[in-house]
Amino acid sequence: MTYSEARSELSKAGMQVVVATVVGDQVARNKCYVVNASRITSRNSSGEASSKPAMELALSCYKGDADGKNTGFSAGDLGIAAVSVRAKEAEAARKWRATTDAGQKYCAERAASHPERAPEPGCEPS
Image (tube, rainbow, N blue to C red; front, side, top):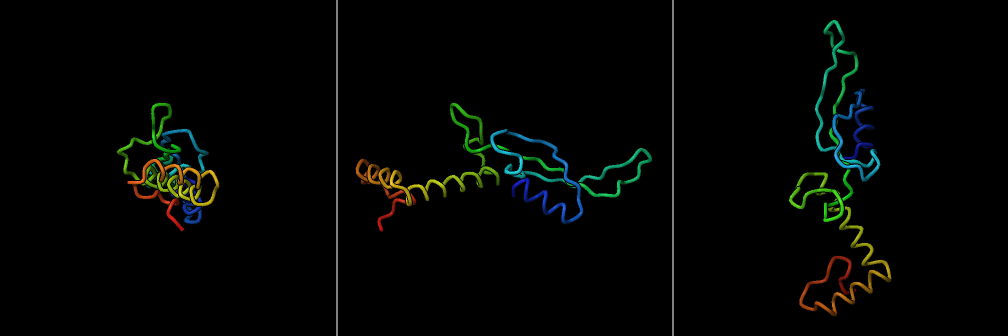
C-alpha cells in the first residue's frame, strides 16, 4: 500500500497519520510504500490520551533494486515494498516488449542470439 492510499484510509477512519521513518528518496512521498505501521497514543502534559488516535508509518521510497550506481532494495529483500516495486517494473517491461517497436526489436534480437531460452514475458509469439 502506498503512503497516499494509507493516509486516505486512515483519515476516513478518523486517525491522524504520523511518518516515523523514511528510507530512500527516489519517489514522491505519496508513492512511497508503507512497510510498517504502529498505532500510537499521544498524551498531553496531564498524561491524558489525546482525542484523536494516530498511526505511525514507516515508508520505503526506493524506486527499484540497488546496483553499482544507485541505492535501492537489496537483491534479497522479499519485503512487500520490494516485491511490489519489482512486480510493477516487470509489468512495465512486459508491456514495453509487447507493444512497442523497440520492444519487439529487442525480442527478435534476443530470440536470435539465445534461441535456447524461453521468450521473456511480452515476447511470446502471437
